[in-house]
Length: 130
Image (cartoon, rainbow, N blue to C red; front, side, top):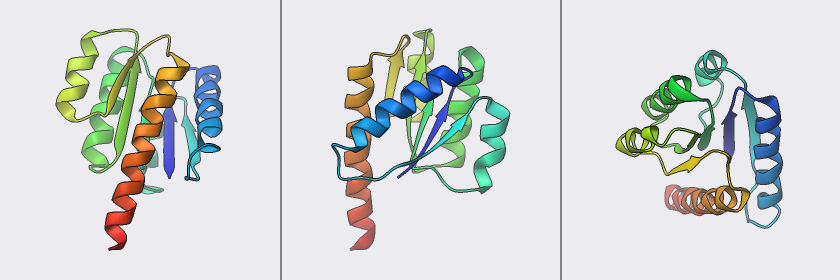
């Protein structure tokens, strides 16, 4: 499973990656993580590999633009969007995100939503093999 983690904060990126790596030890999935500290680098990376899950934790309009771009570019990817602003939740669900989390991110809630995304990923993987 290929996972992109997008946040302006290197500390937040690493915290999310570490939490998800811990989750992976309890799940039947291996994940590769790619960290992006700005929206432009994330957007320019689209040719490298398609992502299965994108976690957008950019603030404000940067987060909104990254989430919209991700869903347009990676139609089948799952997206978890985290922001301090509740206003973005409705916009996120309109474009098809899996989850919207308020910052500061609750680690148990992020782990739960990550597990749901892994389950969906594994179902899609099984279906694509049949």
